[in-house]
Amino acid sequence: MDATRMAVRWIARAGYGARGLVYLAVGVLALHAALEFEEARDVRGAMREINQHAGGTMVLVGLAVGLAAYGIWRLVQTLLDVDDHGWNPRALAVRGGLLVSAVLHASLAWGCLQIALQWSTSGSKPVQHAVARTLEWPYGRPLVVVGGVVVVGAGIAHLSKAARGGFRKWFDASPTAMRWIDPVSRFGLSARGLLFLGMGAFVVYSAITLDASDARGIEGVMLWIQERVYGRVLLGVLSLGVIAFGAYSIIEAFVRRVGLGGY
Image (cartoon, rainbow, N blue to C red; front, side, top):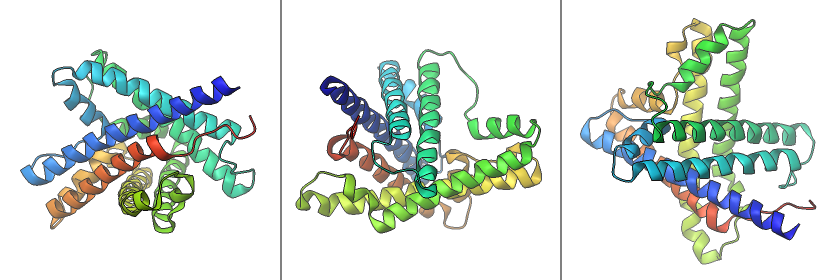
């Protein structure tokens, strides 16, 4: 059992670290876009950018392993309830969100591997593709609405976590370290929460219009912001928040309490 606990800890920490590196890349590219009048890019866009540099393939393979590890950790959190959320409706909603996170990060790991090994050269619009496929199903429109509402709920949860400092109870860090960890974490969680709110709203809108092209992922939301009045300034602030979320994830890799509870 001790070996199992140790393995789970390493899997979780590798996952948090990989997620952090990915969001750092997205944030840096978004900041560059804000400063240089270029288009912002999403997670897969950041992966493609990494792959264009020397050693990029090995970096992407490493990130794929880390993201897969993060997906496994989220699955452990969901099925074994290692964080003691319980079985009440709110707890089940949280665990459902963790399960969605497991699937999403497993998908990102696969996409990362596809890009690294050049198995895929298609464009980077997974949200639109998913909405388009779902709209073709029976009851596709309400299913897309539900999906959008779930993403909005995740955004609200991030904003609540940032406002209430809910992450603090999981961190084993000294009071001195928490003085700078706290604002970085709140800023990062707020930025990701706003991105999720935007993504969810556009997904719901695409169900209303029955047009999958109206759905937007991270890239689409950032481009929409970039096109507003003072869009470069807003995108610059948001990109700093995304960088802060990447830093928050890397901090989690080192100081978050990870265990298996009674298992």
